[in-house]
Length: 356
Image (cartoon, rainbow, N blue to C red):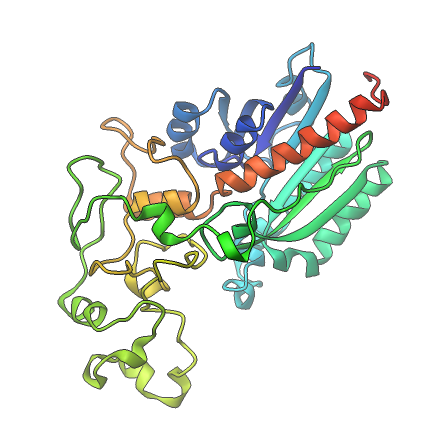
């Protein structure tokens, strides 16, 4: 059977790359950010379309599937910033309002082209939102069997303490996420992921890899990170190094920033600002700097040779951080793909499949 997938909101290709590793052919990715084109097409055997899901037609999306397709998979991760815990306080902002309804557009395409399989990945907070309930109802009203759950990423080989909502739906197959491949005893760690990379200093770029570069820390932040302990907080610093806000009682709750990671635990959730020491617990375990861009990508389980930029395709450091931080971890994408393949294979063995 020819199984073909289209990846909406494909970004730089984390979901596509993982799903392709499971044996599913991803024919195309669609994303509003043109800068994603180079990393997406350079690393994946799929076409890239720089389009806004709010303006593309369902007919166009359907045309991307080859004529001999037996099973159509439509998948994607709608931008999750409006539903993240960090952005929750800004739900009413214009930026978030423009993204809140993207899942509705995803649902409209599903209803129009009726793919055999739908997969959606997002932040756990989405489950509390009316738009998610609306999406579930749309699927059920179109005769999809729906299965969704909150996933702890280390259980699927991702070396970061990331939780995600994963949904699988099909009209034909009974789909559910494969069982975890790791347990608490063998979760992948920071050391497993980035321990073999060559050391670099604050502001330095590796001669072997232009992506293995760390932003320059200020003299003050260099003093702070030198006093930071893996897994500790800024309580470990001399009081003179504390920002004024943290000296107040109201600042005592900001303990999730200015921290070093621990070698032998999964990393904290990689965000779009993982390359900044003050943006979270993104200090390197024993080098006086924040994560490099390559380290952030590896913690997102992109392979070490994944191409993000070259001399002709340079982008700002900020945009590069956003693209990496927003990506679906490759190994989570692979787990989704394997789950789809497992469901198809089980159905095939029972001789229940019939081509539409």
